[in-house]
Image (cartoon, rainbow, N blue to C red; front, side, top):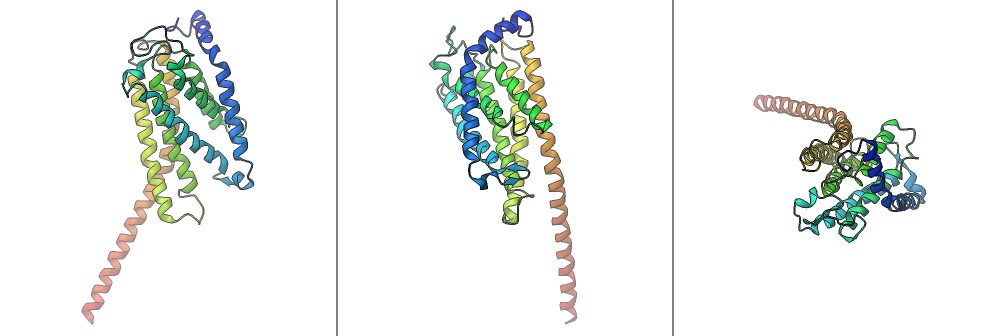
Length: 281
């Protein structure tokens, strides 16, 4: 049943695997919404930055840096960073079979997915009129839910999801301190923020894409509808992220280097004029 999720029997089997996680998903959502609510209590936290309340950035960056990355590290470190952990499903661990998905061995992986689900849910109502944002989060919610029924690759998703979220971390930084930030942000800081984003986002996308190609070759996944369905969602997200990245970074750096060349040319011309005047003197 694991390998045929898009037949009626496979769908019913998948739903049976997802059901035990319902309470965890609800708690993840409730706690994430509560975190959002607490973060916005200060009026200054609701100040708009690039059209988005400041607290949204703060909460997102806390999740990305202090929840997802440490949780992924903790889950993998329990396996001494053995790559085999990436390939395991919910019922296998270190060569064992019939592992309890709700037991201790899979606790960190479960909590990670509950937190990621809540993280996506918390902003759905706030951005309900933003079609691109809403569609992005719906795709993510579909993928997260599907991973409770997948026969292999839980660790790969935990690490791959974290890699993408760290790319999003750089996007939050560039929105807060990049080229469009206020006059209080120094020009050098703005440029460094743009450089960080221009480096981290495509790197995040490249690693995420490479990880999915590797994931698609896992023994219990290769050639199954899991790869087709999740691959469509995964690469749609990466394509959208890269479109946003290129739309921002390419014009910025074209303008930046043109300005540098113009300045260098102006300085050279000024130096030449100064040299001629010196000779005359």
